[in-house]
Image 1 (cartoon, rainbow, N blue to C red):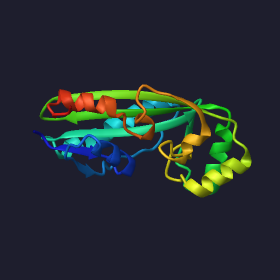
Image 2 (spheres, rainbow, N blue to C red; image 1 turned 60 degrees about the horizontal axis):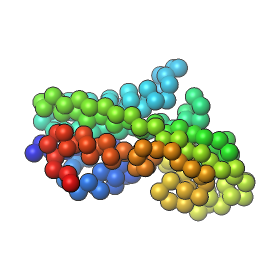
Image 3 (cartoon, helix red, strand yellow; image 1 turned 60 degrees about the vertical axis):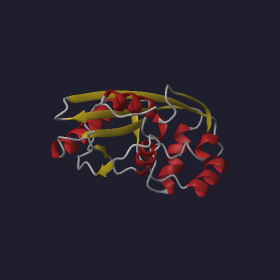
Length: 192
């Protein structure tokens, strides 16, 4: 069985991939994530996921490499990781009563195995109307500063929504495991 490598530094992706109970290594992909002018959010996610997988696959051609990227957007406006409470407050206020899209792309690449699989999952998150005191309490309790859109759906952030429309609930957290499991089975990994 070929070595499996996750080309990501995200602790969320690492925890998700661990759910498949396969041994894997984690390597930082060393990819420039600069925005390209006028690039739609979904295309940006696909480009970056592919670039991350290719960068690590170039170093480890015998391995199967999984790269992933997520781009959140409100319309065509990209929602970045907030980094701090003030930006988090701005994002959640802008999202109040609106629907955001989370484009999660994955690329599975195996250079010597001639594997090149790419997938994009889009999740629509409908936010309920949020009062300013609710936003403040949420930020204080969760401190979601390292998450695009300023929330953690797998935690207290779920209380901010009216609904989530997705074909794979793990995609919103950062890695669509339904597709990943299918892709890895096609590469010969034994998954139930």
